[in-house]
Image (cartoon, rainbow, N blue to C red):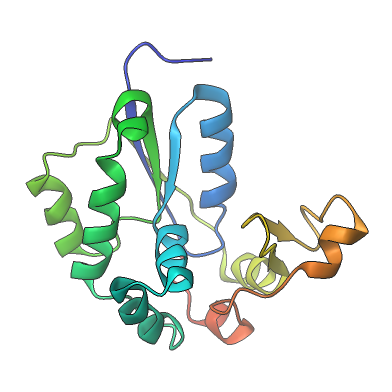
Length: 173
């Protein structure tokens, strides 16, 4: 269902709380553009851009990427024509007060804010079972959303930022 006006949604929760899954459903059902801050950062890392090199240093240590790097990347994506024309669901951003302020400075005001609350036990299970298809960039979960066939299954990898140790340090409620 295509909406008459572009809608802006922020979906927020701990890593592995289901933001990506819910954002994809919103994208599919309402035609909004799914913008995942984590995916944008990983793409910059893969492309070995200057921002990507800076981000990688922090991501490999399980630390938050400096706000100026994340703000630059997200700002550029929000200003692309598809996001402006169709609306968007922003996944995993903002994560700090300065990122909130950056959105306000850009005069970005979401129409809706969705908060996903997940227990620590569930977060750990979700993190350790999550896998990445390096060919398509699609995220699978070995238990909840396994790959469609053996070819895909054979090429799945762990995301470099997904570890059980990380699961114990995730913010949760």
